[in-house]
Every structure is written in C-alpha cells, then in structure tokens.
Image 1 (spheres, rainbow, N blue to C red):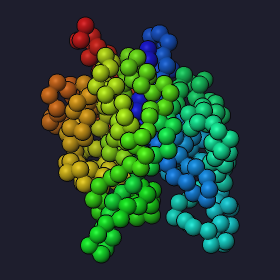
Image 2 (tube, rainbow, N blue to C red):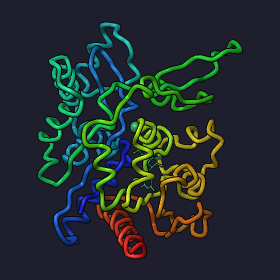
Image 3 (cartoon, rainbow, N blue to C red):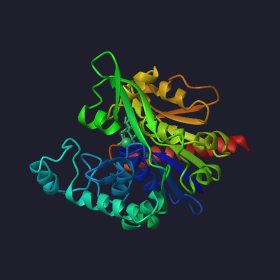
Amino acid sequence: MQITVLSGGVGGARFVRGLVHALSRDGVEGDHRVTVVGNTGDDITLFGLRVCPDLDSLLYTLGGAVDEGQGWGREEDSRRVMDELGALGVQPQWFGLGDKDLGTHVARSLWLSQGATLSEVTARLAARWGLPGQGVRLLPATDTPIETHVVVDDGDGGERAIHFQEWWVRHGAGLPARRFTVAGLHQATPAPGVLEAVREADVVLLPPSNPVVSIGIILGVPGVRDALRGTRAPVVGVSPIIGGRPVRGHADACLAPLGVEVSAAGVAGLYADLLDGWLVDDADAGSASPARVTVRHLDLLMRDTEGAARIAGAALDLARDLSADAR
Ligand code: GDP
Ligand code: CA
C-alpha cells in the first residue's frame, strides 16, 4: 500500500509518527510505503544558513530526537552558538537555533552550496534519522526555493511584506495579516517524485496541519492540487481545528485573511475540490461538510504517539471504506 501524506511541521510530524506506529503495530496487510511531502514555504535563510523548519520537525520527530515540549528542535539542545551570536550583535535573535540543530543547517547549506538539490539533501538527512528503515520517504514539496510572506499594515496607511517566520515567531501572528504571498511559487515545480506519489497512491492523507501556510502552500505548487483532484486514491483529511480553535499555533490568524470560518467545516471547505473523507473531533460531530465528503468524528487530540496512531488508523479505515464503496 502506498500512502502519501502532505505535511507541515509539528502537527504533521506527530501524525506521521502515529501513522508509522499504527502500520507497524497493526501489521496492515502487505508492504506499505509512506511518502511524506513536506512544506517548504516556512524555509528561511538565517546567518547564511538555509533552515527548513517543517522538514526538520519531521526528521527529528520520526528520528526520536525532537524536543517533545516544543515539537520542534532537538531534545536536550543548548544555545551556546546563539548566545555568542547575540554577544556579537548578530541579528535576528528572535529565531532560536540550538547547537545540535545548527549542525543540520550547516550540513544542508554546505550540500546545497556544492550543488545538491533540496531533495538530495533531505534524503541524506532522512538517512541520518532512520526514516528509510521505517518505510518513510520524505520529499520536499519543491526543490525551488519558495518563501511564504505575510502582508501586514505598515502603520502608515500602506502595507509591507514580512517573512512568515518573522510574523509567526517574532510577532506571534499578532499583526493582522492582510494576505499571504509566496515568493517563487509560480516558478516552482514539484520535487521529483511528488506528483507520482500523489497519482500512484492508494491513500492520500492530509494530517491536522495548518491548512493555509502548511498544506495550502504544498497545494499551491503548480501541478500538486490538480494531481490530488485527479488521483484515484481516496483523499482523507484530519481537522486541525477542534471546537472552533486550533489545537496549537495560530491557524485562526491564518484563516482570517481568507475569510474562512475557524472551524472544522471551514477547513474542509478549503479542500472541497479534492477531499473524500474528513475526520473531525467529537466536539464537532454534526459539523457541516462539502458535498460528497464522508465525515466521521472521534477524539482528535494527539496526546502521545498512541493517540496519534489511533487517529491515523481511523483515517486509514475511512480510506479503506471509501475505496470499497468506489468499487
Ligand atoms: P507547524 O508547521 O509546526 O505549524 O505544524 P503543522 O502545520 O503541521 O500543524 C499545525 C496544526 O496542527 C495547528 O493548526 C494545530 O491546530 C494542529 N494540531 C496540533 N496538535 C494537534 C492535535 O493534537 N490534534 C489536532 N487535531 N490538531 C493538532
Ligand atoms: Ca510550519
């Protein structure tokens, strides 16, 4: 069975870890391969280093090395390099990078400077973290550098665009966003294997990732959304919104400029053209859904790996039932 997942950082990574757990525990029939297509719109160059926060959250989480409390960065990391950069007056100081984490960014930047593509770099990092041994292939959505920017008021009646990370991390998404733009997106092409992974999948899963700045960016890479619309595989999503609120992060501030209601139904509407199945929390049982979408409800809180495995298993069950119905 080929399972393709479009993923952001923390929410997506926890879901994928649960999925891998469910597949190995339940011994789902046959060989299965999980292809994760990771968002690269959050990528940023800091201190001359290329940082890919969502890919790194996936790598560290699947590699058992993530800082569980934060959901990103390495466990038991230190900040000696950042402290020294601060003493040197090097900006920015609002984006924290741990010492072990910096090793990833140094290696990635080195390999990119030597001519490797982001896909190749990501494959090397995935090998370091044992993803192939778990049956997981991690692909960046695109090898073309793209960056999500947020257009905000400049305080002078006009507007200015800031990098997504500056908006999210420095300002805590507190500056009202007028809209999001993604530099480089129109020229971007899907990374090798991405379209095939969607077209040839038996199941496509949308984890409870941010629908605008994580999954929305991946769907914006030319060709990806059409591939999801056209795939014969059932597309099953998991709501990141429970009871009208994001579980963590600021998805509400991302939905606002789109005029989309902060609800499970609002998010489903963003996927209406490609979604077949939708999992919502028990709190949202009875929530409206786009036509032809099958909705089921369950506890959607990923308290731990077991909890995430339970949700991923429910998504696979729904996909299997939808496939059987289509036959
Ligand atoms: P990011 O790139 O690190 O922001 O991570 P993602 O985009 O992959 O996921 C962020 C989304 O995950 C947020 O909108 C959260 O509401 C959602 N999320 C986080 N934890 C949970 C959880 O336990 N259950 C559900 N349903 N959603 C969650
Ligand atoms: Ca992200």
